[in-house]
Image 1 (tube, rainbow, N blue to C red):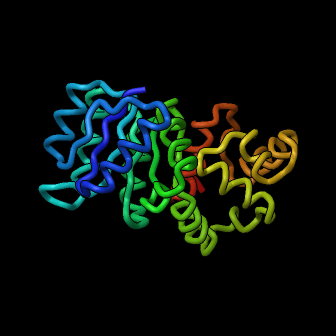
Image 2 (image 1 turned 120 degrees about the horizontal axis):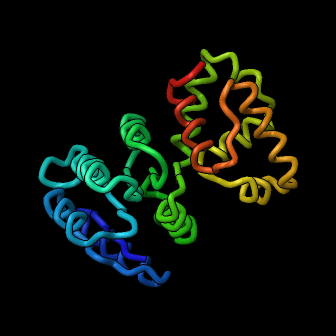
Length: 218
């Protein structure tokens, strides 16, 4: 699996290269700036891009904007964005860009090798990997003024949080130590209470839930 990596801090970039190679990924390019990322994405045709939000020369959202531009040129290009802090605006821009193959993680997650590599693989396969802290903030914000969220049971909220992170029914069942049948029942109840269309497609249901939490249908 070919990866384009963009990170301006040399030690972190080098560490990510070594980590990904250790797990069998091929590094098509490892760059440190927006212009280099733009060229690498155009020339390398990677299976997935792992991109720091803030890159030179602007050190604002250069990495994210390069990744979004690459997705417009190549619809569906899987992109996993890394950020130092929870920035809901960045998550919103990424989610608004289209279906699947997207992820948003805090850089702290990089230090859990298995969790990080799982996120890269999930995004590369067309799935979604959202940082738990992003989901918790969206849930907390929604709970303040959203009666449908308030109707969820504690267990349904746990399932909703894991679903929004991009977990499948099997993954949720393993995390909560329950059966997949129980998870399916909870997800059906959640979609019913939130007024969302039930879907068997893991990624579409994740995007639907995230859109809801981020201010979508009520």
